[in-house]
Image (cartoon, rainbow, N blue to C red):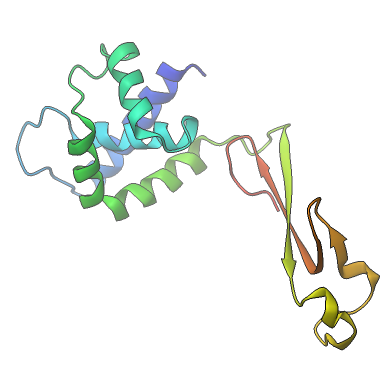
Length: 158
């Protein structure tokens, strides 16, 4: 799926959901609709790590045929704050609808969760044993190791 196909699909999904819930913009014919705004934000969170500034530049340069008018950054941020709850829900919805659950690539990351200081290992009642002692490169820790596996669409697998 190309970026243009992805943007078109996201726009259609978002626009239909907004129509279903009866969402209306303040003006009858805005230059940049809420569906376009949410599409831009979904694209930014999916492919640009939430960088709205670079996404705006990309939309103005590459997708001017799809989005003839793209407002400046302060206007986008102001409108996004007003629609914050709706945007969060729609981002989750669209990512779940378009994610490929049979992704072949998975990313594993772990993080140590220290339970106590190393000097108190013998007195720790929560955990005990060498199994809970670890080293993460710059220091030793004693506690749990939290593991997270995500797919290429940044959706947790386990």
